Image (tube, rainbow over all chains, first blue to last red; front, side, top):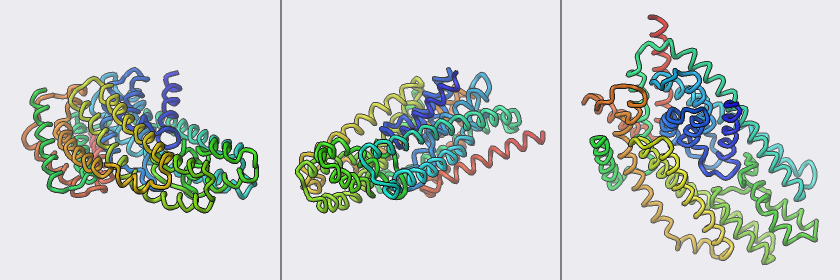
Length: 224
Length: 239
């Protein structure tokens, strides 16, 4: 029942990414937190969501570029983390779930490319199969959205099951300790955050603002 | 739903025609042949930023209702295509979205309850998103023949500049929180004291490497993380 609810959430996330609304429910920050809440472990979902979001910041859906789909992969990997990890959240399952998500988002992105090829046949080739009137256009457009829903559901389901199998199977073999797993993740995230600066430019006044931000971040840490 | 049938040949063309259907039915309702021809025209290749598609839809609605010649409407759509795409990409994908996400993430990393960061992000982002869609549709509908001029008058460049500054500040804010790993250390039952001084240097070096690598850093960081994970598993198996 929980898995069915999770797959349904994966469908919403998959549709929100491109086909319907684009209200950003599909961002890992939101998608993983809600997936965690569905599974009864919202803190675990939210923690994984922040990790995946930092990696996803640099992905821009500009033009016809093919990009990894981090939202659906985030939902699947949240299931992997919660069901495949230990009862209490620890660093090793978090690392494994994050690495799995970074791979699975490529698979999910590949399924989006495949869907778009299908849409090409469905929509762009439609005039060659007969005149497109209003009713037919409506049916074709809604059929494309329905295909996207099925795709998102399947990618979530397969990803969730595969991820759980991997995380539960591999976590016991980790040989470097929790602290090393956590620090590896932190350094990769620092790299990804640094790279995000390329979105905003490197002019002098931006660098000044960056340094002011660093000071504020340090102030927050010292008050904690 | 304008991107519902997105494909590599007509891009958002099908969705644009779908969104315009109520208008086309109203204008050509009694003349089936002209309606069919109009649908064919509007489902052809078209692309722009999904949020600014409302601007194009508003303008084409106004032109179709006014009975403008089909060739003129097509030329108008072609002229609008590139500029609305570039404008939306820079304003939303590169500006508004990462800034809102960084706000949400900094709230989460500062130790707020799990739902606050995501909720603040959604509320903030969608306030801007919906405002842009509504503004675009009204602008297109009311001024279809002077869109270029109206867009130049709008303070979009200033907003974009402000977003770039806010983004740089927020990256700076988030960076120390990520290096320390707050508040995840508490949740992961790791020692929550501030890390050793050498760790700050390692973290800063990682961020500097990311700045230097730019867009390539994401893939490199992901591959390095995967490689480290495999190494940790192999070492564990060997024990």
